[in-house]
Length: 495
Image 1: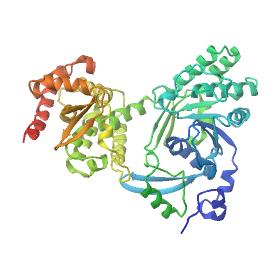
Image 2: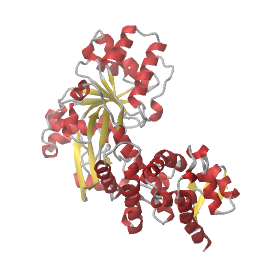
Image 3: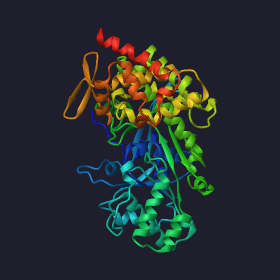
Image 4: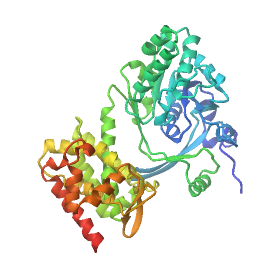
């Protein structure tokens, strides 16, 4: 039995799916969004849709596609309407529900519809720019701003803002709120600097440069929500059967959502009025707290636990949380050792609340997060995520953080190559080889080959200031604890 595809026609035929769809589809366009990726649809567009449903924001999104894929365009076929299934654990309870998102009004192709995109600049209701063009997207390029379109995202944005400046004679009211979501610290600041560099390089009107600096609001932001890529065939079929329609644009996400936006001006909160409808959108003068919590508790725990759990026999984060031993390690290292030592002023109640949310996310039965993927660039992650916390622990306490030491030992064992092939190094777990996908793999190969023992390996690596930025053997008792934990792996491998 064939199913209909999600579309405005289907909503007309089955009004129970979304009773107020006619009003939602008629809302004016207020946002231009560079990027069609699942993160944008699963986070900013989710918040916009939720606010529209509550009659708060009352605006839709024009999406700009930077790539021109061949074949049928699902966004065109479905008028950019898509379903969003939210699955996971919230306050210990399982969540599994689907909503229909009508936030996107249309999707334009930058290569084919550039003039139409520029026409959006003259729409007085258009007040917001969003983007997620990957970290590589926010880079300066010597663009032709008159091209259709300019090559880089900052070039496209500069051309769009110039068209708006000219359409409204540079009025202060025509300035926009610009919120990039690329995973770069200071993403808004960096994007603004590149736009100004484009303007200067191309000798644009000084009035335009002044308008960019004084009338537009470039906001740093931090996004946090797991929205995997296209679901597998079994999940697509399961949800189509459950929902009663096919959806080529279906996305699935976890329950947790955070979009922290840094802003000094009250204008930003006024324009981003959708923030009123969900505590997951935070507009604040400083968002460093949210970055530190995520980096130290979520990412830091991931890094310390990935090798420990992988060598213990688990393959995914979910499997870790189903193991009493592994889940205890994860909970204890996060809440008892990392949380009190975050190198940033944070109340313990806030850190513990965030940590318990993270544990719920780790327990999500619908997401397969592979531990081997978390170990990619293992050394850089360990240094950035956990060394500052370790050092801060010792500023506060002389007690050895035994679980952090155990995580470090697992890291050293994981980074022990047993084979090299065409520049790729491999470690071994229970007789099976695994890839060591880390730029420091050759370094560890040399260190393990040169070491007289596991104890000397610990001394050589932990004392390497070039690797860690400090000598970790000076931390009282830490190296000895790492040696003790590492010895257990050596005994196992020799058995």
